[in-house]
Image (cartoon, rainbow, N blue to C red; front, side, top):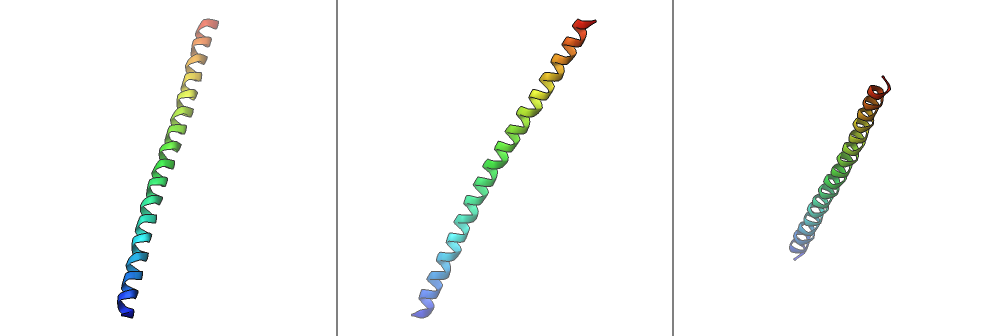
Length: 61
């Protein structure tokens, strides 16, 4: 009887550990996606500013 209870409890713990791991992976992927989007926006802004600098430089000549 004790063996069945222990097996059930261990199975429950393994299941909970698996679900927590899956949730952690989802959150990590979400954070990575947000970080990539933020970096892309910063890069786009940087190149837009440099393009405007080149236009201003061309007009000043």
